[in-house]
Image (cartoon, rainbow, N blue to C red; front, side):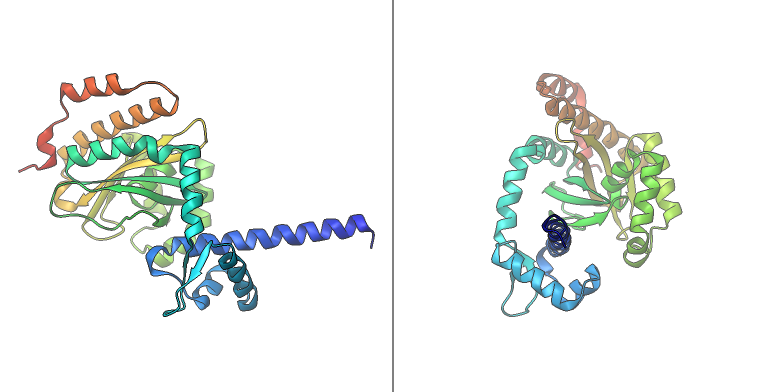
Length: 286
């Protein structure tokens, strides 16, 4: 074997190892606060136990994964937090959306959330609590779902091309069937059509009974990242009339945030709209 061919083969092997390590890291970080055991990780990755263990050891050595000494489960390491902070500063979407989340939570009374698209998944980045005492706690920062799950997930799926929608559904088909029995592929397609018609995605308690959410999709032209602003709450909060008024407010925040992403000062325009009157009674309707 020539030195050149030997180098190419080593390069392919190194790339394959990196791909596998990234796959393991994504699954571990997606387990959030509950962690994941080795056997579940082997099943999720399709890798052998020795390979999975070897990759975990390398990730642990680099601070990206930690193993709890008591339950022996694997969790995201401290280094992932540092990398996340650096990435947030690079793209800035969480920072730019912070005041929008506060306004949405204050004016609606419900939880306001920011999620981003990552491949065929959505990842929740931030949550701002509202003042209404009954809350939906289904979606928390760090949670991952297949794109098309929840109000924000539907909004993000709806901005893809038709081919993109079908590719995402095909990719997530087994996961949807196993973990989201209330969501058939045809139902998700119907929700996508409705989101494109109305300008927002709506989850009428299809993931967890009684937990509603509605979201709008946002695209950052600088980074290419797509994100969603979502309002989440209990079923009684989402009457037809209130959904329509909340949709207007979400669209205003979408416009504001996209202007900020393009580097424009959107504050005066947004404040003018709010002064014109987002109904404050929506925060605690009778």
